[in-house]
Length: 350
Ligand code: SP5
Ligand code: ZN
Image 1 (cartoon, rainbow, N blue to C red):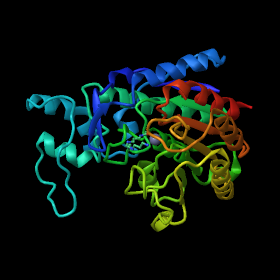
Image 2: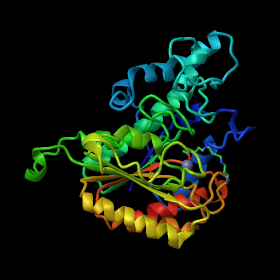
Image 3: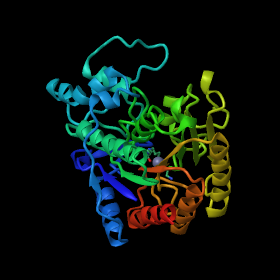
Image 4: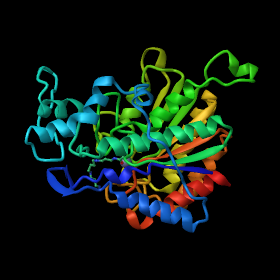
């Protein structure tokens, strides 16, 4: 198991977020990575490889040029205008309003869909580091490794082509999946004539709205997500079962909205259906958006999974027999995060 680390993640450490009308400490902290690294070392995994940051050209594969320019420079423009760091929107261009002003406050609402993705001076540096770790993990699969883990921070699955939210700025898993889908495989007659297909399996507690939207009209990347039903849980506006893809992508997006409080047995049953759909698709590569906020004790979650469930999930995923990249997403129960990541990776490795 190759492990790739976003070593510059600590440059991103926002002081607070606003959740359900309350100012609260930012849950997506640098300590999460420290905890995971310590648990991996303790469990005997080889030290992580520090990945090079993704370049603007890498990111432009799925993100728009104007969004990347905003992520890179929005914080400096905000502070130059005398506004208090970090960048938070306080108005959004909902339908009926005009996207006309290019002042820093207007840009914040244009590119951020909630109050959990503030932009600090170091946010873009950290996000490029996370994207680089995911891309290095994808490259490891192309080099013939059967599995890799990208310890990405900040996470990515809520980020769309031109939208940050839910602690996410650049969509690490989507960048990796797109990179794999565009790769040219040589020496294999079956695959030589077309690019390989990829499945993304999202097991974070929250729906991966960014990943879904990025691949919604594509049939070379199947997106499958298990998550809390958006009828009662964030991100509220996407993740319903009737979202099945559009155009060429129709039938290539699959959502499993799950009830509050679901336990190991219920979750693993839904997972089996998701894995069957992936097996039927027959992809060349698998990318897993691995969130651990499905854990029973997660402060942001509402499911009831125990640590051993992640080992079972890892084993089930491995039974697909696909080169698999695990990309770190959420998980905020700090006392169990290390053990949960170790269990998943051990499940994948055995
Ligand atoms: C990557 C990731 O996991 N992002 C999650 C962002 C979630 N932000 C909104 C959380 C909504 C608050 N609901 C609290 C429910 C407590 N049971
Ligand atoms: Zn989550």
